Length: 314
Image (cartoon, rainbow, N blue to C red; front, side):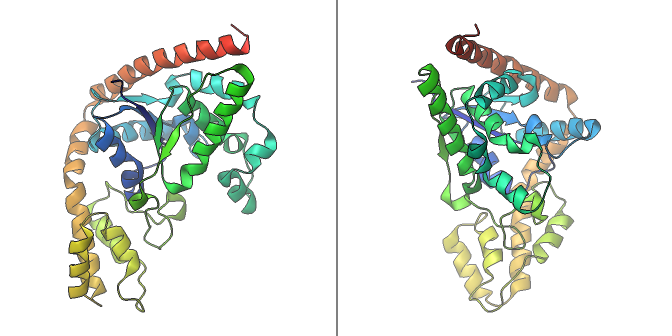
């Protein structure tokens, strides 16, 4: 049987945190044997925040190393850079002509930026259309996302359906895959873990950085247990085991935080060791991206040729 196709991407905007890992990266690793996995370095999406060429090159290399370090096997998956496949931006323009301004004004990211009085670039406004192009170009079946990204997949389905209704059956309607246990990974301040909130624990942070951040997790002394600590801890231990520990150490928040820090350090230690080795191998990094781009390009070109025929420009 043909494997279902899965696509996900991560922006090269800094070292991945626990939320990135459990919300997306681990899912890709766990599913790489059962699905045809496309893992994308979303560098064009990152232009919304990274506008320095040297920094962008550095971050792209680092995110490839991160992908490989967490366990993605380049022999099993297609790891590629968004900017290497020009069909992404070409399809975006085609889809732009089917999408209305009011439709995009309902996007969470746009409304949030507008509410905060930020000057909104066309890239931020048009973000959902580029994301739709990323997904639709590869006839993607499944997109693993956190709960906050669900709207993007709904947008993608709406755009795909509008194209199909206008030009004939062309696109698959992808489905989101949300693991409820990691739909929203909590940060050290109790809010969703996000770089924009500066409340993250990086998976490749040093041991000392992890200990320091864990000790600053906001605790609520009025509850039965420190919920914010517990919510992160259950990502690393079986809950039945965890409940016994928290009962035994009831009220001893310092001890519980120290235990959590130790568990995080132990969990990511093998990945850190792999990362140190992979980061030295510039040739491997370049070959992985080159091979991934070759495979992705072939699929994307074929799909875009069909789309161009449907709209009458080819």
